[in-house]
Length: 317
Image 1 (tube, one colour):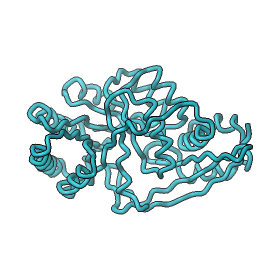
Image 2 (tube, rainbow, N blue to C red):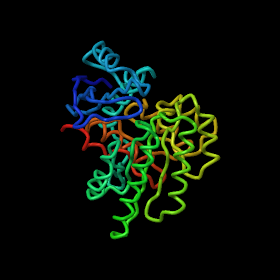
Image 3 (cartoon, rainbow, N blue to C red):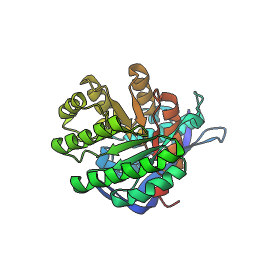
Image 4 (spheres, rainbow, N blue to C red):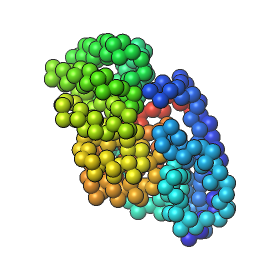
């Protein structure tokens, strides 16, 4: 079948620049596309590159879209090369919207809210908690480790004092974006293990990507040494990386970012065949890309884990 194809680029500024171990992020840029079938039905998709995470660049994606004809076939969509993963996601998402073959229950999903770095977290967490988030994520590895752990201990105390009056439990995720040394990762995991042993109202759900992607062996060693689970993120940005880490024996958590991972069809095949423990996460895409990614999450999520899409408060509407 052939489809009429249109696309347009966009820019969305962050309300406050997002600070991670990769640097500071000020503007989210991407592409919105649509496919129109012969009956006039429209399917929407989003191309949201994250080149420093391993995807193609925005310039690559725009160039690919520009060279396509106005009328494209299903075959063209399923032969988009693997070095254009966000294009694969965007086009296949639009096709799925036009030709749905699954029922999606997005209402069953729980969400993790993203906290700011630094001392601001000590007040911001309460706002997200009041909005209903019971899973929160905090970026680490961006400041001095002694300072960060001190702030973290204050955060734990603040959360504990609040939860004692409301009889709820909070899960915390720590995300290092590959920015720790082996020794720093050990220090964080020692801290997390103590909290998980002594706290009833707070669970450190996992430490995400403590080391760089070329240190998988050391991260496997950390898994054996500590009880707090680890999660891979940057290490599993695409299917080739995901398969490699799985074959190397990674049995903890895989953080999957559908919008930059590549083909939804290939992702579904891998997850359904291997039954991995996944957390599906955002790359600050628009509502179009989010809806497509959340449909994938609702279909593939096997464990009781919040999806990492509590991020809309970071971007200008």
